[in-house]
Amino acid sequence: MDILAAEQGRVMTRERWQDVRDLLKKALELAPHQRLVLLDRACGADRSLRQEVEVLLASSDHVRSTFLQGPPLVEQVVPQAGSSPSGVLAPGGKLGPYLIQCLIGTGGMGEVYRARDTELKRDVAIKVLPELWSRDPERLHRFELEAQAAAALNHPNIMSIHHVGQHNGSPYIVTELLQGETLRERLKKGPMRLHEALDDAIELAQGLGAAHDAGIIHRDLKPENIFITKDGRVKILDFGLAKFQPAKNTGVYGPTVSLQPTSPGHVLGTVGYMSPEQVRGQPADARSDIFATGAVLYEMLTGNRAFRKPTSAETMNAILNEDPSTVSQVAPNLPPGLQRIVNRCLQKNPEHRFQHASDLGFALESLSESTITPPTDAHLQQEVSAIRSRRTLATATYSSPRPMASSPACWSQ
Image 1 (cartoon, rainbow, N blue to C red):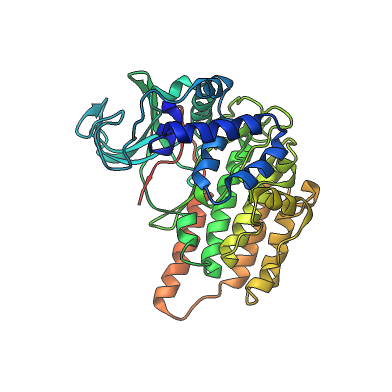
Image 2 (tube, rainbow, N blue to C red):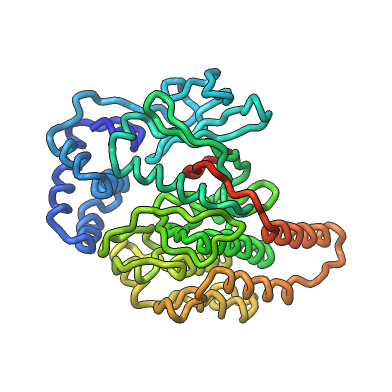
């Protein structure tokens, strides 16, 4: 099937189609929680097989039925990032005022291009959902959902958008071009220093608080969806699984947006960062994002994932029934107050967690102020000043809510 082959960026042969088809049929006969056990057992170390089946399970009925009807008529390879001009947009071409420079990324939610805004003289990123993929209602809905959610927000710790439109039947979104790396890339180098982790966690809580005040729950917070720019700014990415709930405060961060609710019993999120209520298929709220923030903060401080087992089923069971090793056991030199903050975020009962991201941010900032002492070295003094300057900017009032839609993560490293 062309859609699946395109998403995986490789050839799908007839033999591979048969393997995926057989496993997909078995999975469709099972309840959602039983499918994880089946995939763990059947896929083993074959990650690509598992991913192909999971993509189909998450797709619409139309996409699944099309796949099951027969093998792909044409086997094709989709170009990788930066390789060829055969994508939706050609380097050197123009899309309105945007001069396309190069393809910088591809994935399950579209193609990302680097471009130059010839009118405002700035570099931007353009995310395009290819016309073939936009025929899939599920994929199109997620693309539009992410645009609507991010467009409802106006905060320095959430990626900004500039424009939304269509090109030859393909919807596209223009965003700021971020320079830096994802938190996942940063964590590959090891755990973060204390003040670095605290500063990033404070900004993460501030951005998350703005989303919650606008009535938007992220539901898929993880290191891959957190970006750290070259100047140290934290940006929250990818609102494709966002959920709307009535906002408590619709002030300076922008208007609320009505998003399609999730059906009860539908499990959404990323294993390892999902809250217990998400694992059970129960409704998620702001406290679910706080649980995920706790899991991310744990990983920032220790270099280890809070919940990581050999299989997805075991990981989900650990989220429901086990507590991770304490931060102090893994990193004994961290302040006890930080351990209490992480523990509170990771409480199984939502009522026992921080009830709002702003509460979490306040606790982190109070700890940071008491932990970061004025250094004697001039360079370190400048570093601490920069940290406090970014915090001040992040809490400043932004009075002009953005009228246009936003997109999935677009960045450049």
